[in-house]
Amino acid sequence: MKKILITGGAGFIGSHVVRRFVQQYPDYQIYNLDKLNYAGNLQNLSDIEQNPNYHFIMGDICNMALVQNLFNKHALDSVIHLAAESHVDRSISHPIDFVQTNVLGTVNLLNVAKEAWGKMPSDNRFYHVSTDEVYGPLGVNGLFTETTAYDPKSPYSASKASSDHFVRAFHNTYNLPIVISNCSNNYGPNHFPEKLIPLAINNIKNKQPIPIYGKGENIRDWLYVIDHARAIDTIFHQGINGETYNIGGFNEWKNIDLIHLLCRIMDEAMKRPSGSSAELITFVNDRSGHDYRYAIDATKLVNELGWQPSIKIEEGLKKTVTWYLENEQWLRHVTSGEYQAYYQTHYNKNI
Ligand code: NAD
Ligand code: TYD
Image 1 (cartoon, rainbow, N blue to C red):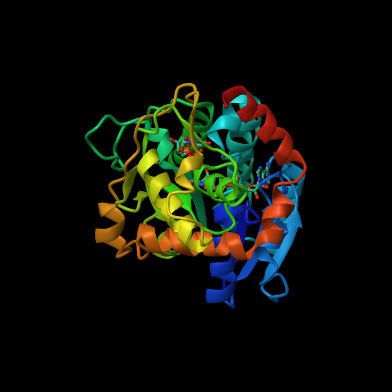
Image 2: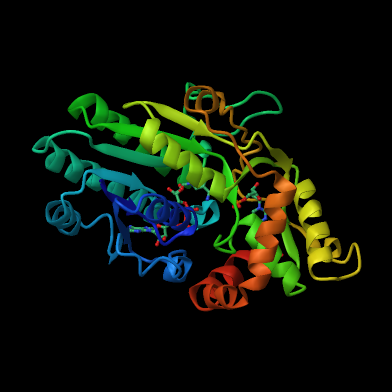
């Protein structure tokens, strides 16, 4: 039996991780700590919120007294840390928020875990969930491995890189039992519609322009979110103390090609004439400092721990589109309020 603190469990990836652990491991107690920022949504977990092994705590990972109290009260033995500010464009307009949560919040969790576990018998694990963006942009060739030098270029990736360094420093200095994973771009249900794929789905649905930065030539490596949650489960249980694992889909796409594929799937799903979604594609000003290409070599995870991506892109996009079309109320809920204000400010500058 384990008592796991999952941070950021009400967000996109976190909600899939929480669901997986609550359902797969009924003898574990899962404590979801989330401050519910614009991307945190308890509706993401409505199907499992009554499970006796699931507990939600609304709060900030930066709050030292709150985190200490959770460790003391529940004798937590593990952390899976996903809470973060996660959107590159927001990091360009509000970099301090990213330092606050991604750097200071992570160090606060590490420090409290170190204090609590120093006094407890072992079998502890601090699992830090990170991103491939810490490695910086690639040119046309090459892949990121676990030994690629860090070269973050955006305030988001710089804050995640900093947090990764602190996690390793706590392992090196205090022997804190840690693992880190760096994953490529995720897509799937419950993704907040500020990121490329859910934004495009929402805009196509509403017959609004699909904003493509620059010429759409940038390349990302896409992984279905359920495959990421499976990888986190595998690494949490089998990963070696102190190690890093890259997670990716072996699935690189130019943005413009990916959006054309999505447009075809949306035309079919919405029973609209072929080509009508693609007419909404609108090229807009490029993101400043836009990283050209990310691509992960996940061989270590595949060879050492036996994980494989299971969902191919076309199947994953179809599942994602179906989910968004069947969950209109979720979409309406998250696109009201703060998001509307962000969208107006961000895209009115661009379109
Ligand atoms: P998200 O923005 O959808 O969710 C983040 C969650 O963290 C939200 O529920 C939010 O309320 C919560 N949160 C934010 N600040 C907090 C704070 N100070 N205290 C407590 N809770 C807080 O993000 P996501 O896409 O689900 O990403 C989750 C993690 O995975 C992040 O660490 C991100 O860097 C990493 N990651 C994401 C991707 C991706 O493609 N989305 C890829 C690789 C790694
Ligand atoms: P995004 O989903 O923001 O993820 P990240 O920047 O973390 O990779 O963006 C994915 C790609 O899509 C990236 O190259 C930027 C581009 N993009 C657009 O072209 N238009 C958009 O409106 C957004 C949000 C992103």
